[in-house]
Amino acid sequence: MARMLAPRCRTAPFDSDCESTSGRLPTSLLTEQVRRLAICAAVGAGLWAYGMVMDGLARPLTLGTAVPIKNVVIEAA
Image (cartoon, rainbow, N blue to C red; front, side):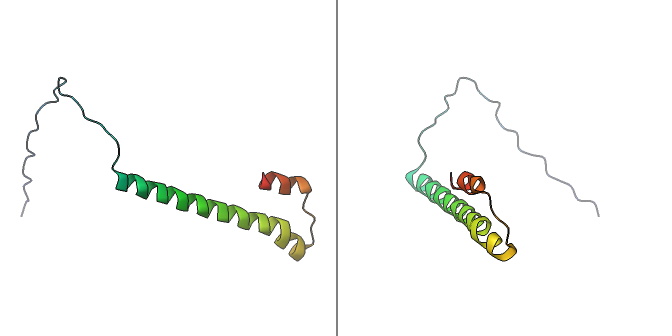
């Protein structure tokens, strides 16, 4: 049994004379976005700090290799 699709409704052509309205984002949406950005930055900082601890403490203590001080300075900066 073949299925038939219904045709789409026609839309009105774009009128270049109409004004587009733009404005500020709603406060609730802006607050959510700022909160998401703060969480993302906190996760990134936590992972960066974890990497610094692994490179600066865990690797030298477990493998007995020396970490060049310039690597630690660059990571901290």
